[in-house]
Image (cartoon, rainbow, N blue to C red; front, top):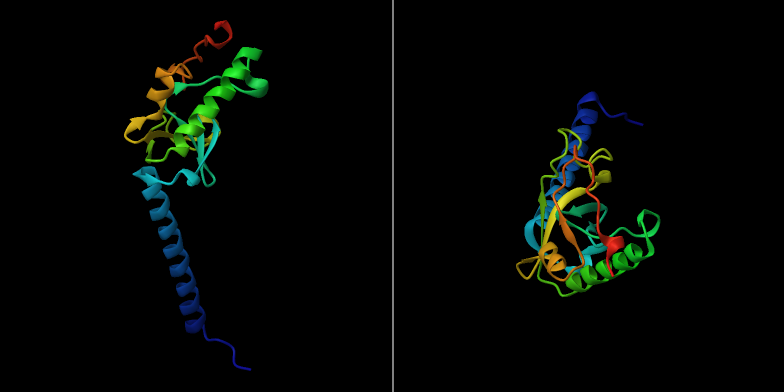
Amino acid sequence: MKFPSDYERARDALIVAGLAVLGVFLIFIILLSQVRGEPIAPAAIHVIDGDTIAVGTVHYRLVGFDTPEAGERARCPAERMLSTLATQRLRQIVAGGGLDLQEVDCRCRPGTAGTLRCNHGRLCGRLTANGQDVGETLLAEGYAQPYAYDPDAPRPPDSWCGRP
């Protein structure tokens, strides 16, 4: 039995490393094309709630607006119900197609983007449908309220529980 020489082992390791780098590069290019304003298929987007989506395993907090909280985070039954309506409306918008997703700066402290210390581990994005920002649509239809994320400011009180 012949054992590989140091040269052969180094060559094989270099080939494997090169293929790994190429694979990571290709994945990066594919993801980049999806989050830099390129058209994205509705089936590629999973709506989590009225202001959060996922593309594959990457979660995005949509910026510029806030929707009611669901489940345990809801402060009252009305907010929980409004959260369901906002989520359903975002799903309708996404299902209509014509989608572009652009990753934007979360305005988090340096080095924290994509970690739990910034937006609960979500990246930030702007989603448009047929050229219209979905946040603007949800705001105009009453499913959202304006919200400019600032990691150092306390979360502003919402008015979901006081709505009729």
